[in-house]
Image (cartoon, rainbow, N blue to C red; front, side):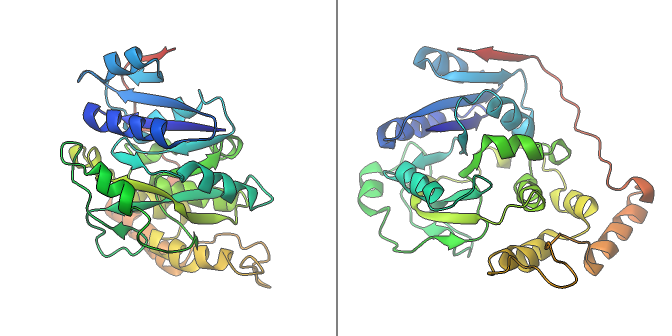
Length: 304
């Protein structure tokens, strides 16, 4: 059983297509939960009319607060986070279910395989053009060709859609609010799962989703996620992906004589970046790991 959580910020047409695709292409028992940032474009009235379980904030509070709030309402252990500008393909659910059954732990992060009109040179993302918005989305072509790119599962880190066990989301504290409104919160979540002992990070090939791309993030002022990440962890995001993520996939889990548990440690580059940011932006060196959460304004409501 899956709880499918979808944050949405006044993207009604995208949200409708997203929810419809989940309803049409999901065979395992599931529930849908939507967090509405604002919802004044008709999204609130629509989810109420559809009987969809939802939470709402008066203003856009970003993905970190939104996800933490809506995940807390999830009824099932396994939770899928997908964005409202994504379309689920047939078989996504059974592919994820098989992935869960293939491991002997619930301390794992699974990622869907994205299909986009453009992939920016990222070969993890399949480049296929089925439209750039709900208005010109070619559903018939998508259903015919979404499995045209034949590939297997890939061990490593992806992005949304992300499947996780609610227990471990709670254990690591979900999305860290210092990353609000959300840039680099995914890497921070993976780091926290890594620190908690997670050694299964897998992109599931047959769990495919079409992504129109950045329909909300392009409307917000981005936080300086890379800076926050290195100040918090003492390692850059690039180093985390290049040094630690591959080592986790080794038979020994990346353990060495000097680092028997493969603990993430500050790097020389990370220390230099930390010191530079501390001096340049006047962060007290003794407090560089203590970040204040982004203040939140707005009333919270819950429906259904």
